[in-house]
Image (cartoon, rainbow, N blue to C red; front, side, top):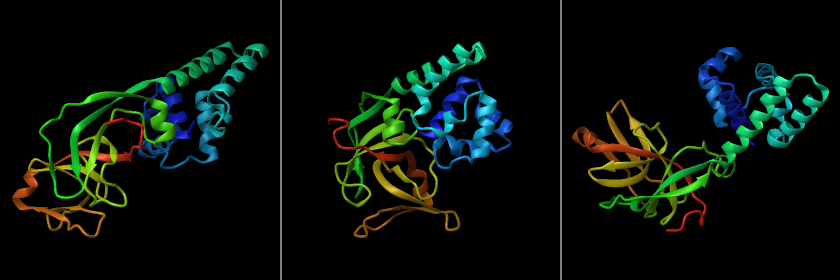
Length: 245
């Protein structure tokens, strides 16, 4: 199991929010969030401090194979040595929580009739969807993204090649907020586009940029800005065969 997921699971198990744990570790909430998302890794001293706070061996954080089997072994050792029954119960409960989290099913909303154009815009009238159950561990361990609900839509066109190809299915985080440089699903005047978002606050305009040099950027400015809505951020291209259209 990845380190960030281990930190999040044990934090939630002990009833701490990110701000509370960050205070105990003398770091910012953003730094802790980066650890849990896997964008950065804590140093060994910080992991030792976490182990003290959560009363677990440092191996819980260091060993990829520790997550279930090592916790089970720790439970047996603690009970047999009669060191701390409370600690044994806590470790056993943590083992059960990890197993439940890994086997938890999350519904992806698949929109088979909705396409975002990597080209010149796709107007979608039919927005019905069907739920596709998928395990949380597939999202975190295989796709390497946080376990939460995502939308799945098709890519139409080749303006985002080589990053996205015509017919690709993409995993989209539904949101109206996006950072500069992210690949977004944008609704412009009723047409859906998948483009790279480039904000220009000085000129007060937004560029929806293609990765394929054969396609020109879509420049949104003045009154057109009111017609532009970000509806999601592309997080991953789904491997073929995960979802059958």
